[in-house]
Length: 256
Length: 269
Image 1 (tube, rainbow over the protein chains, first blue to last red):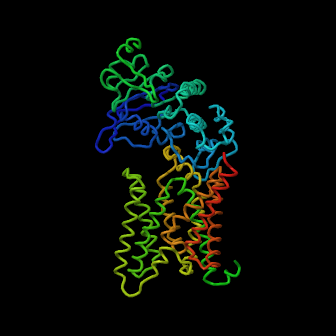
Image 2 (image 1 turned 90 degrees about the vertical axis):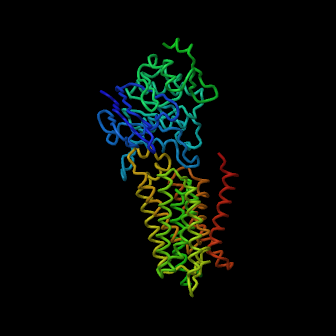
Image 3 (image 1 turned 180 degrees about the horizontal axis):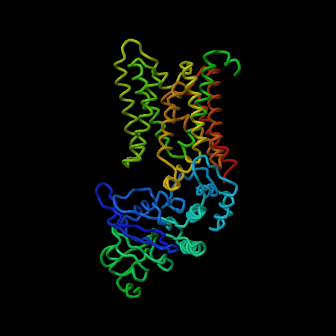
């Protein structure tokens, strides 16, 4: 079954077409990285998939359902979340948020056990009573993943999850995603700048630059032509952090 | 304290003050955590124009202040959410504009000049039966709001986008919160005054934040500190013959200093 089907999607901000006829199809159990330069419309696409924005034209189906009816199937990890660091809320309470069912529907004992399990899953059970604002970037990101996982999502959506992560932790982080995918057959869609980190793990890469430039297996997609289309002539810089990867024509040969 | 309660005007003032101190620190907890402190001050100051319009039209200044304050609060909220104008900038426009409007309109008041200083800095003697009833109504409404929307408020404060994905109508919760905050602010005016009002909204939660590890404890402690600041302030102002509003805010400030010191000396993480 198709986990995600995006058909002829158009979206405009102030008269400017940010998304131009995007088509994207993702099979259940796939892990897809959405790649593209700043301003390519990656986050906008995610927000439409999540039902937070309405497209000007086109439609989105998640396991056959429109976004607003598919919310129960989705787990979401937002980009670079910056809540007030002094907010008195523990890691455990943050995970419990994922089990919100509606107004006046209070959490049950079962929910607490689920939250404990999700924290265990991402390996930070011992930190459950710590205040969220006192955790490191990597620990906070794990809590947010646990919050998404506790919903037992069929589709996990992450928006630049590597932002703010210690580079040494990034590999472990992607391995965690891969483990989740294998264990629960969760479909994962992640927006990323860091193509080198994910290219070994994802089943496909979607290159977006307002329109969908390419979508396919990493080795098919990461060609010089596509990268030029995304990042301009001659070379492309990827990645956050102090040492971005530089991809030049010579590397292309190795990839293809 | 019991001696003070025997004075009829003080009884009203204390009962009304207790309710508004509790309501202000209850909603103030979210004001502080949502980093909306400046909005609180903005709404309070904008009610000044509302007060003067009330006198000009010969209607209750409380009613006109409430309309004006709610309008300002909602406008700031609407502009910042829909037009990418920062909340602070929106407040920076409405705050001086409303004060300016109030001062200009003040010139049109002929004959009877109301006790403007009482509105600016608070005057417990101005608190009558209407304020007493309104203060308790605003406390009950605030308690109902926080009781009903506690998780919705906490989630949308922590991560608004994901709260929306979870199905929470974050705009509705936000605007309800702004209207209620405006109501509480207007009811507080006569107790602490427009100028000092944000202190009642912000100081008790800041003191409570030093000791809280979850939102419920934080809100509870904040209300407790709000009530304590009010009672200490009103008692001191009576005993030492000091202005009530300023003494209440001063007591809150001392409480915050003590809380900070206790945290620093004994409870460092």
